[in-house]
Length: 397
Image (tube, rainbow, N blue to C red; front, side, top):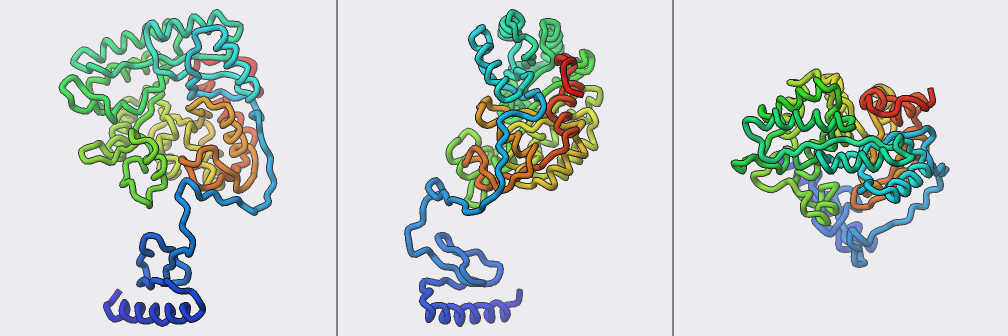
């Protein structure tokens, strides 16, 4: 914009400010077109910013009640039996714990949970033994784990051997390979262990040989890598949880982690990968589609990204219909009262309803109203194909 036009715009703002002041709207600050209002003010008219006359509440205390009257269709139980491929149920090594967990799963129509605690060796076998001794052994399947410490020249062969032993013991895959992998895990020399480290290749090849999937969590939400200012959607979460701030100098970037992950997908086309949390692309469905189109060996799960799906229901619905054979239901944190939010977003056309955690999302959710056949694929059919060790009988056709 030319200098003369800026001067003209400011002159107009001054005139408008004077007019507003005459109407009783004092304390107005003019701004040039495209300029943001100063802190503590908001735009009340084009080119004019004003501070509230009352003290502004904090981000924690402002909780407006909606006056919108809409239809409500609460969904306490999934319409079809569901498999949670991203389960973190905690300790399942006692009959009491297994009984309690099964009762809660029944209340949600959660038929099977994949225990994704990333455990191996003795911890894995003790969990498997407890589940197999239970009358509910068909309600759970267990994933093995990978220890990425001390990666060296012979690490890949040792890790592959441990993986094979864990699969023989009864694990049906590996996961969840946690977010520290690639982000903070280091090699013996102190340098960052990259996701596409060549020394890991024997492990990825072992997955293909054993025909079991690798369930990996790479990076974190993109906002966690951005400047923690008042434009960051996740400011409150980052302020509450300092360990989620990945924007410090010298830290690996979101794009670098995604590049490394995709290098692994590309280099090992015969290995089946499950990208946790939609690969952290639920906020960019075009990018999620590109990933699935480029890598036919990859599937995704919907754990902990409902806040992004529910604010773009039409685009998300189209995405789920197109890629239903590549999407699985997963929840992540086991909080029973949160599952019905997933059922409601997936199954209804409800509008403008609350999400379950304010610090995740300040916006409302909308239902996607998925067709029954898509629900069946997301809830169980896709998982049955990806995790071949799941119980294969007793499911609706």
